[in-house]
Image (cartoon, rainbow, N blue to C red; front, side):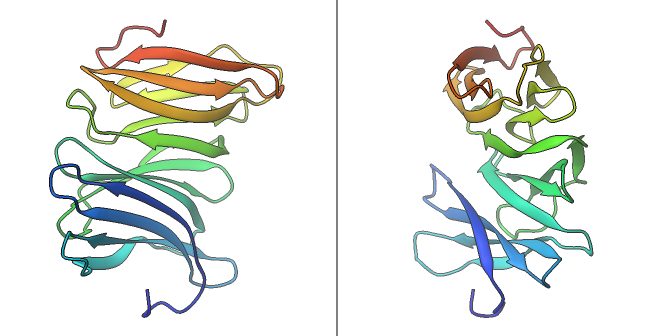
Length: 193
């Protein structure tokens, strides 16, 4: 981005599997203490269709994770301040907001994962994160939400992957550096197995 000359870091990308359009979200150092989140769309023509601020305020926003929803909108997860995890939705054709940001957790850890490309997924994406206050893994998919039992050390999300038909897998470590867990979840609000 040649217009914004300060540091641009923490890029996250997703691809529209139907059109081949690449979407990117990144952190922009507006000042030394204020990062904002910007995004861009690059269609198959390799030209930039749009480049704009996705989330900008006097608060510090970091760690963007972008994905495309089945309805064509873009979902963006990010931290505001030290631990407030938000989800926002944007129009993929313009980069403009398509709904108010939702505070998902006030105690999120710095590591979280996101992915959406399943017809059964909701309009704000699939998200997995660690709740630092309870040492639990949390998974949300629209109205569907699961919280694990507490671990002795803060668990670390590794991946969340859609398997189609409303099923997805979450992978995380338990914080001890020796155990990894995999669980299958359903968007139809059935508990994990």
